[in-house]
Length: 396
Image (cartoon, rainbow, N blue to C red; front, side, top):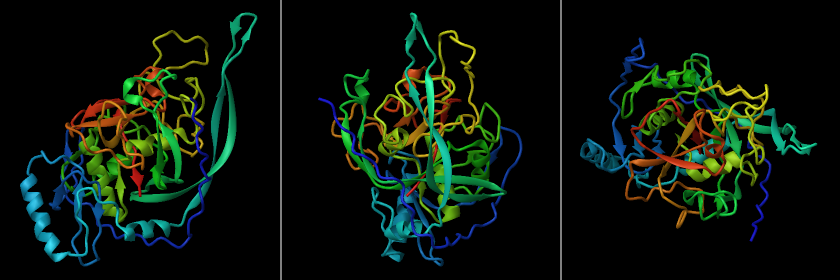
């Protein structure tokens, strides 16, 4: 039985009240040097748990960061003891391990002064056969508009965050569409509105945040194999991506995190039900992936490495780039072998026997087209690093 996808609404203009910039301090103890040097920050106290919330206090109150590491991590007892002591002094704050972002934080996001930008997205038409020969795919372009805000990371480095409207979609693959077992059963999901990075985090953005004071763990400033300011940062493990989000949250006063797997697929699909957000076939003009076969035409170029995040002309229908190919992107969720009993509210699925195994989405420059589909999903250990692993952030 075929399922009809509920229609998404267009991104809506939010209140245009001026945004009050959060105070940011000058990075301390920044170490600059070669690739093997590590940035050490100050000794901020943190709490390890399975939540992904940043609890904001008053200007005169110490902020507490509850990170979404597993409970088995080292120095757990010291951090928990610190949190218990702080709870007594901040009775109005929430410290549940699976708490949602506080209402005050959501209200502040609604007051952002949003900008608009126009972009092009593609729809690929399957080629037809003429005299027995298969023609070239036809790429039709469409124009659309998105809302976004810009986060100042310092030193002239900016992070563009696209407004993703709330909506419903069918997550995963139907068994009739070349699905693998981790992609089924296909199920309806409702997703709340959020902001997502226009691109995967770049090396320039990574370096700006890696020089901020440490929250849980040190970060290597120059960690990527394929160098370039506008190239996606790679060789980043899940724990490093979490540390990046925590430092960014502290600097801005806004709640940054990794996307849930449902949020990632919803944003990638952008209202489509095809294998890729641009259609049922993929071409090297639209994404960076690997093809084991020899190029069939002079138009096919396979890079065998990452490419700059603005390398391709077309976004998806929500204004997001590089959602398919280039680098796998970390998600918040624990890995599950199928979608049986998966949540349908768009939140991260964090209950699993092995909390060290996390979801990655999107495929990479080293993957064949099938691994770059909108529904394709893989897993990786939280300590895993590779030149195919990156991430993008969500603000909610």
